[in-house]
Figure 1 (tube, rainbow, N blue to C red):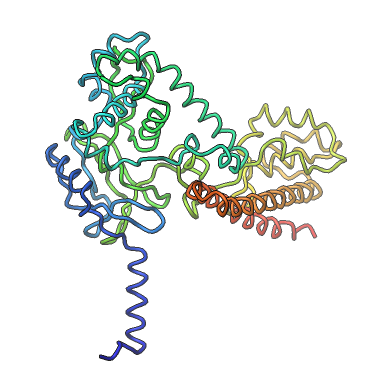
Figure 2 (spheres, rainbow, N blue to C red):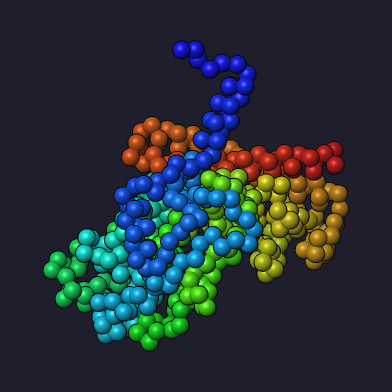
Length: 440
């Protein structure tokens, strides 16, 4: 039998290959999704628009069965499917929550319920949902310390703060967990371990939708705005789509309406917000490749590191920047250094006789060609410093991937982030070179 040959068949095979690369692999036949669909049907939800699938790049998500149009409702999840603090208070935990003083926070109520139901295993009515939740997360609180130390400095600081926050959350909740002992034959210290609570905290933090609930007298007065939405939370993030998402009080459903078209058998995305990659990794545990909101942050110590040795009145200049909120959120982006970064550098590069013009700098006025050139030169030096530093980190990550096989997923996440930052810095260096040519 002859093999199919010729130019037409080769084109057909290439198209098929490209299509199979971008198209997800249907996972609706898997036992956990079959059980989840049954569970959702019992709660009056059936979906004829989306199916679970696995995609290259994003992993597990939802795929469209048909083409989706702008303004179309892609999912409408009944209130009976949502896991809220009201669900928790109406459960066996409600009596214990009502007794505890000071009142538990809404977050603690949700986390306690998740840990308790997961411990219940087959006895939990929420088992079909719990079975499709991630077994582990990649938020910084879950990363190994040696991996956290490979993050860019501003994100590294926030990562350690997150770890301290979750540890404090656990420590301050142990008394409440002990009060639940009558509900369990096993010791609560074993059930409500730090690892178990961290998993629950990440589940709420990464997967909950915004849904404001009325205050509950038995809960602390913190805003009660989180709801877990089974199936809906399989939707992945893309910065390139627009959706409207909210709880519809008339239909009593949480609804998502797309403002972006989506082709048949394509992954359906929602947008978590215009977040940079630091925010996405910190809050959700992933990095968005080619994220238009991604940037590289410049800290105060790096800001002054490459200033001319002749620079004067540095303390006064830094004080002015701090007083006028020009010391934070200084960044390099895909199109070059941000206006805030260049403005801060222009002020820091003012000559002694130009210093009286500092207010004009903050308003965006040009003081002199010398000031413009000097600030661009400093920006380029800072950018080159970051490029060198990022290359060094990437080399270290590469070595660690060979030596620390158990950490390969965590290291790959950091590698992706650093590669994205390197691309941004290289684009910024190119933009700065173009700006500098005006002064040569």
